[in-house]
Length: 204
Length: 165
Image 1 (cartoon, rainbow over the protein chains, first blue to last red):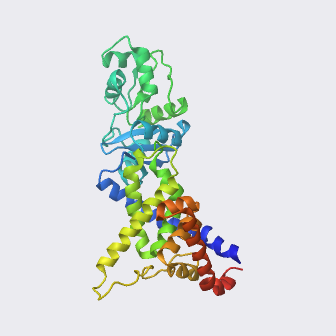
Image 2 (cartoon, rainbow over the protein chains, first blue to last red):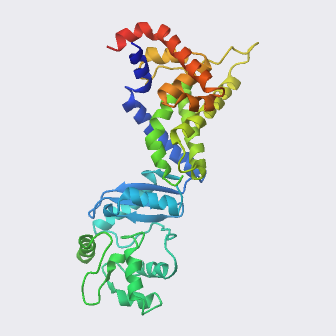
Image 3 (cartoon, one colour):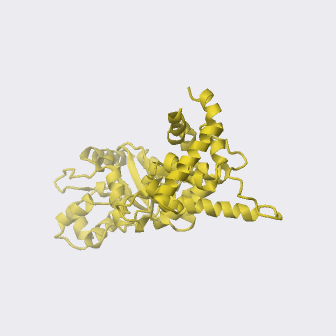
């Protein structure tokens, strides 16, 4: 009999309903935390033709898109260290971003209007990322061309590493940088993903 | 703490809500939960990485529950004398709780016994941590918890037989 009482206290039979209530309270927490600038980051995971994508944003804008292969938990852990651990899941914050991504994958959207926050990049890599945003939908440039445009024609390898560490792939279109011999070049999300993105853009 | 705060909500959000309900009743538990997690979010970066997150959250929830109960007392209609203690449960104390009879019985306990039972049996904290939260010695916390359980057995026993086969 004693076990029944202790068990009822410690092992809830109401987990489902309490869990649903916590979901409601969580949404409320996101709202009040945003309103009081208490958050470093919010995030959401969306499905896409290149797999599940982790989207993370600061107040300023979208700051990270991570492919599933990067390990979303590991990426969130790294963001907690680099930007701040006051991180909450929030679907609503990303409705517009998710819509723009959907339109892009459908071939209907050629540029992204959502604000981005490039705080994870510095120096020459940041210069490269800024230039990448100027390469139009459906076009490609070689690593050497990008190096020259970013202000250092000899820094071809540095362009490669800037692309490989691009914190906001797809929206900052590093997939539009290919080898001058016509080869695809590497891609953080895998060469199949790069191929798919370029195919979407050439078909549209 | 360097981990994303979302993990704290995922791992401990449910138990903190059950504790708030056990201490305050369903109606006011939501406010206490919200205040607890907003405070915890703000303080999260300063929490040491090896801290006991659940104990830390329950400590905050304990203070927030006191705040909520005091606010309720201030809102209460003026009376000639203060009630011996504020009514522990909300208007619908039984809503969404696992066992109506059990949680009503819990709500009828004296504050300290109810807190000690909630923090030890619902939250799973050891008596030493419970004592640090409610004040007093671990032995006193253990005693209050045991007294609370003994009282629950009296008030809850008849229902227990029928509701827990």
